[in-house]
Image (cartoon, rainbow, N blue to C red):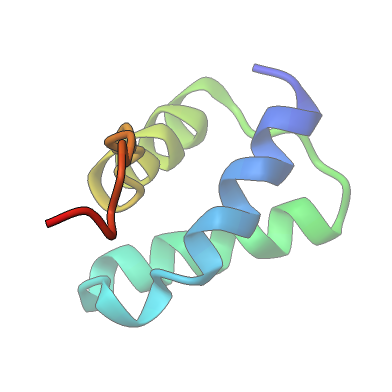
Length: 71
């Protein structure tokens, strides 16, 4: 996983930090500190970050609106 993908995941997860459990918050804070130091995450840390991303960030497809004002 590239540094760019790591950055994107961390930025998205910042919005969901308050919903995380205490252990997940501690892990996320560690990821943010490593990211600020411009370190690449190891495979275990990246796996954990990806799990948090999939758990909290749900990318739902939007339903198209055909004619919202028609009765």
